[in-house]
Length: 324
Image (cartoon, rainbow, N blue to C red):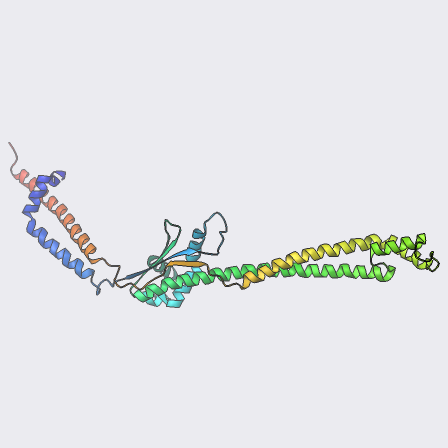
């Protein structure tokens, strides 16, 4: 058949069948014109927004943009958009349909495109019969994604705050327990300040107080010395322990304050570079492009069909008039 598609034969075939090809081309143009008309193929309008992630930190090796893509494509965001705009009704899908979920997911992914650009920004593109709804769906995707990230961060910070509060409660109980032990020692043995009372004991035993020590109560000095010897180390340990716990408590309290601040802050996580707008002309279908493909396809199929017809005629003719 390739002999029929060399330059000479091709021109000969076109010249021979030119009126047929012309009629087929006109028919193909008319058919494509009708098919691409608003009555047959409803026009779709495109709305686009370009955004950058903000105030988020990657969980692993992914970039902020890649993480934002995960948020934007999450099922929660998709379901929120579907419910807000009642997309099943808008797309004409009955909720009782056996493959309702998969069909809605397919249509959503078909008409809502979220892609990363070469500049690490994210482009959200929505196609819809209603240009205003296309714009609104883009804005809704941004809104629900931002809300989802904020809610997730609030939950995480609330978990941190709860953990900190539990730790602080433990430390408060520990401080109370240490203070109770210190109170027992001071009330039972009469010691409460190691350095100052040690000096008083030394003065009492050495008679170095003013007046030569005539007025010193030896029994009290001995009891104080005995209590210092038995419980002085414990009291010193408990005193230092209270200071250490108080230092830990203060550090955790600071972290708790930061967690409360983070849990209550209202940051936005998306910076919109190019906001979505209402399209003033359709993006689909491209009538001229459809007509071109229809006519070109029709001509190609017609030429192949004509080539087959011509080949069969040539073969039949050679059978009738064999060369002797």
